[in-house]
Image 1: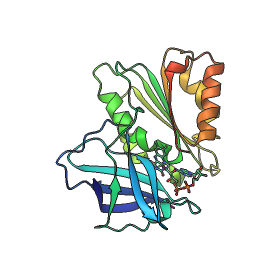
Image 2: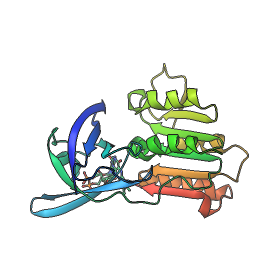
Image 3: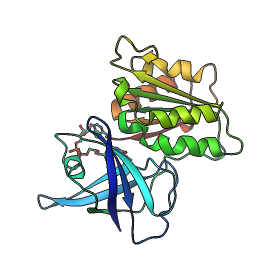
Image 4: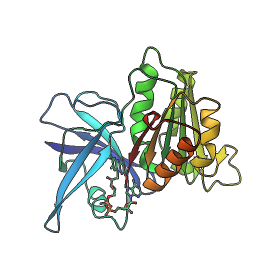
Length: 229
Ligand SMILES: Cc1cc2nc3c(=O)[nH]c(=O)nc-3n(C[C@H](O)[C@H](O)[C@H](O)COP(=O)(O)OP(=O)(O)OC[C@H]3O[C@@H](n4cnc5c(N)ncnc54)[C@H](O)[C@@H]3O)c2cc1C
């Protein structure tokens, strides 16, 4: 199938939020947290890359959050797309979805690794027996807290949702958490060892957080992760 670009806007320098439509279906079926794969022939070679869906299921539209990797093979092409252009895509796939039954959970994402959580957080909170959810979101600067308004609105609506951005290059005016997410894992899980931790982002962070959790006695089945590289 093909995905048609309806619109996009930049949500931070070199980070773009896209709205796509799949005209050939009425309903695009997926679970919050899943990804689509885009393919394109570039310099005579077919290149495929997966991207997490940042929106909830609804009709034949879906949204993505893309980071421009300057030296990357594929993202410069994605950033050249204009409304009306289309790209080959696969049906949504993936196991990085909220577990059923839900348990108390911590979501940990860095950079565009926030993408699946923008769909999974409202999905988690809509479960009838939703417990406490903490979203720990690591970025460099305040301008990189993508979807901040959405997460803050969600936290106002659900008293069992805590939104914790952490800045690794915070300005002196920042009064929130600073440093890498790794420094805040223990605070997020507290004394509990019976919760599920979902991690998404680049390999180095995911591996660090997994090692911290294993050191704290977490079973591997409680650690659900998606690596972007
Ligand atoms: C399941 C899954 C879901 C993904 N979802 C997203 C998403 O929602 N948004 C998104 O921007 N990317 C996402 N990615 C990463 C994406 O698939 C590509 O790897 C990324 O766009 C780089 O492709 P490229 O061809 O431009 O770079 P390549 O030529 O493949 O170069 C890869 C380099 O880019 C770095 N890199 C990969 N992803 C990122 C990133 N997001 N930010 C910064 N550096 C990166 C890698 O560390 C590596 O050094 C996802 C990856 C997976 C496996």
